Image (cartoon, rainbow, N blue to C red; front, side, top):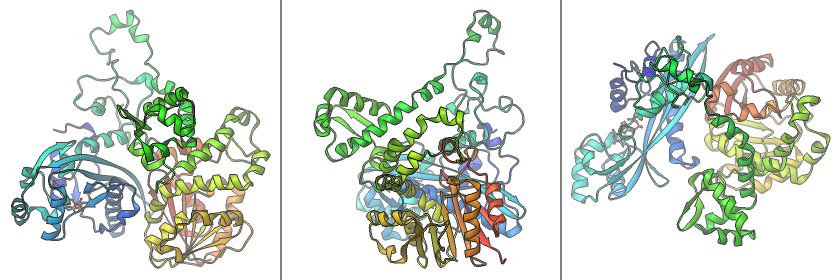
Length: 613
Ligand SMILES: Cc1cn([C@@H]2O[C@H](COP(=O)(O)OP(=O)(O)OP(=O)(O)O)[C@@H](O)[C@H]2O)c(=O)[nH]c1=O
């Protein structure tokens, strides 16, 4: 019996579990999944400090494990499996990540840290859909994580050593196995138990449901009450409900169908209900109403950022509304309203002690946070907001040379040359690149290259990540003189900096610095076709045979899960390209062996090798 119908969707696919963990194998086969086991050879060696959170590390490791197996199987017989599943379980005590102990002393150190306290267990999971076409491997990665909190009892030294000497801790994250003897150490578990054991089965089924069952239009959503109602997202998943044939994985988020209308056309009282007019009542348009208010939510966020509200609360919170108003030098009533709206938007928490930042706000909306997105908020508020106010006019009248509906006006062109505007743009790019650079730098193994040139590399965030990942790589950041001049203010030193140099120039006019690998990250989409081909042909002529071109661009929406931002961006830039369009683009400019991979949630990365002319 297959309880989760979506597991049945994988029945006729070649599924590979890229894991040696016997626990994962057991959990998945108990769930009725048929799969081959090919343990991954990916070494768990990612640089932990470069991840903003422990779970980001687990997710990336899971992804690399699965991609390694997909790549190896494809290389071996030029056929990849349909789906490869990778997972990584870690134990986190605050920001410290514990993996499997290397010896007994290490196990002792780990268990002592967990003793009498609460910790989190994260499992990152990657589901890689593979496709081999003309000898090339294409992959689409969906990834997620699950957190469970576990509390250990106060344990004596003697008991810890007895447990260690049982041998159980050695192949387990954090040095314990909750499913066996280790269960005796545990006082409390909050969350999915199987997630601690090594695989979050429930979340996995929901993720498959999201991938394989795209939401149907609002009006068509109905719940079949004879399907399995135990888990919310599973409710509308029977095959007949899905409309017959296998829709295949969909990147659209899909939680639809759970509301209370029911399938009245099949229910005994259907005719009565129809006569009463209940059937003609449309479903409540919650999503649409939220969309209508979307601009207000953005403006609240921008305003709070501009007022430095999150900085004040970070340093001095929790604070009452009057105290926040005093610190911001603002009106008490207005401040309280803003604070309450921020609470409703999930940006703040409110307790009897006052208002404080939420975890995501602390990570991303505080000025000095490593992964602060304040620069992006500032740029969107100061520039993009204004551009979008004339969308109607731009659609009616066209936008000159621009590829998107919203071209740049002369006034904006002029303004964009101002120092303040350049700085604002750089701050936005800087904060966005911090989120994406690691994914771009590690989407492919670039260790064969000894020099790289990041064209339009702005403040050098990607350059720094490349230098950190590849200890033998020299990296040049090439950008306009005014950008290079201002980039100094963004540098923070660090061991890699001596391998990075900044060179001013215009990639449409000046000689490109020599390099084995050229990098274009989020550049191509901003240019109309003629400019783009000019740039690519300049790179192609500068690139020696065997050299590489790495392009990172926004992935098209249909590959994008729930994110709408690339599609919205088409209004001010151009359409995101498909993997095939990217491949053809690079081939047209003399690059061969073009490979495509996803780099995190936002970007797709393409790597081509310059063929001999
Ligand atoms: C906390 C806890 C962990 N584990 C096991 O810890 C390993 C984690 O290591 P991993 O690196 O994620 O996996 P692996 O075993 O090295 O396999 P692989 O996927 O090939 O890397 C996995 O085994 C899990 O079950 C338990 O069995 N019980 C528990 O309570």
